[in-house]
Image (cartoon, rainbow, N blue to C red; front, side, top):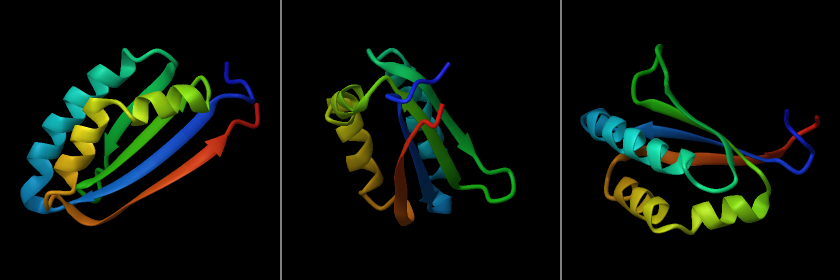
Length: 101
């Protein structure tokens, strides 16, 4: 059950067609590591059926501090750096939400 202090983040990634396979590998590795992080309640990556190359990340963290620790981790910084090396077809859209209960 979610609480009002839970920290919800969504991100939409548009990946270049020649980088979609690499993204799937990165997502698998990132998901496995992220789910083991302290404070991670839910971590789910999806790829659009209708628009291959569009990836959606839905995360729920116990609180903002848990998310900030995750975001500053070496493996997230490495993921972000790899994406910035020509994999993105357009800028990533990230939004932060709070649970309404």
